[in-house]
Image (cartoon, rainbow, N blue to C red; front, side, top):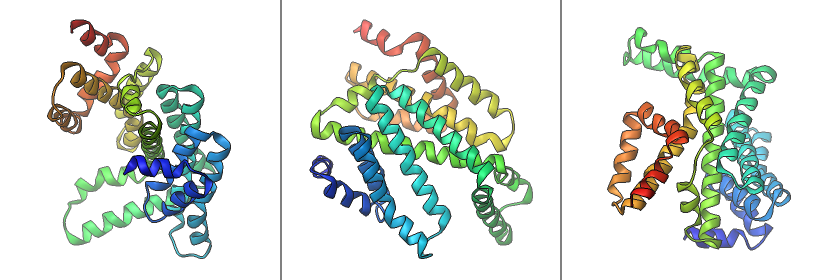
Length: 287
């Protein structure tokens, strides 16, 4: 089904644009259409599909039918997906693509905080409304609300914005790359993902940045998590390659992801150490 969808989008602008417009109703379709078109046909075609996919949200906001915050978040996410896909097309490097996504997401969030603070204020107000609702219901005591109140600060909300943009950008480009492989190079995405590694400098910067920000207080929680994402993805690549090399069942991957949810710092450390140790190469040599 997904291969058929990829082949349909690659028939032309009309088909890809139609799928992108449907993304207004089914959120993942627009990022996938933008990513796949950009990866396969280049930046110019990708921009056209981006504009087509963004048009329903812009029109809806113009007529006041949707929340402007949600609309802008969707538009910014599509832009990050486009830049990520274009970077991957040019460099053929997942590492450089992830760096571009993280850098762009951070820049957009910081610029939003400086140029359009009302967007961050709106996000903060939404959190405060949720906190007030919980307090009225008596479901939480004031002390337990402190982390949420801290996260609702300008630094916390800008971090949340950057995190959402980065994660959405990565999801969009990974799905687009996967669908490109389904249509034109079956199995290619799996091989590419399992080979994902970070350079020592990038890996160290992510790990040390995550640790340092973790000690700066709750308002930096989202910022620290952004830096954890590349390391977690590398750890996932190590797990997938280990399962392939050892011929293990899918249940081991399920176990890995459960452990990743429960013990994220440990899994993140695997991604960090892989830059020095190269677990996959060692496993391959033992075969």
